[in-house]
Image (cartoon, rainbow, N blue to C red; front, top):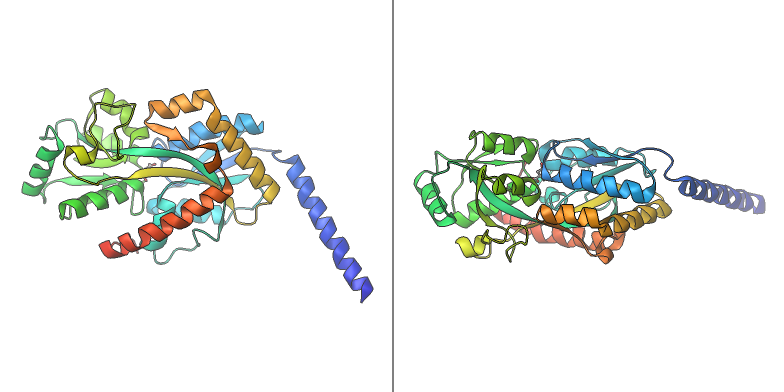
Length: 325
Ligand code: MLT
């Protein structure tokens, strides 16, 4: 009996030593960050900016792999199939919290199957249209949409994307269902908006700011409670005519469930260091976004935020009767 106990203690200690050795060597190779939307969109932009600066802090190469589709749930499922060794990570946004209510047959549990590393940023969205859309402000747009509801269309990045969520809130605010056109990300959607193939969309400032400033798309409002410093001339949606229309998009970093705590803590510290970097802060600010405070770039803060957002959006989505599957 004693021998059996001794043997299992020795095995446990050996396993612990191996895990600690692995953590001590980490990172020893390239780290891949899965982004669940197409290249060129806001999530991709946030991921690439974060990867660049985090990689410096970790003294490692961090690359982005775009795994788009189904509003971000295909990329999320891919992460849950990865080894929990710290070399495959995942960046997603508020869509990770809305997916459990929108997708009734998810192959994963949004809380249980992911080890939170930390929050990254809070970002505004903008309501934008093709540059020749016949409305000079939101009030005119609402009137035009009411008179032409079967003729206009709205782009999004698939059910569960931030653009879909914002579009869903827009349609419930105007009590009108519109034709929506899903893309694998708002990178490709923006190409069609710039080309006039689609009428309007709600998209993150990380993707719209440069086109707004260049006059290539029309902007009708920002979805934050207050105007944003990068575009102070743009009214909030509330000011422009849709009271209490607020959506902010938070991005966060996750590891697969079961990643050694020492590695998760090392990643969280590198994330916190990256978010203090002046160049990254300026790039985020130029794009109308801002890094979260240091105490939110932690596993515990993300766990709390994810749980509260899942609990918040579940009833809203169910009441709207929107399902993806
Ligand atoms: C979305 O949720 O709309 C996505 O963030 C768009 C994208 O990143 O391509």
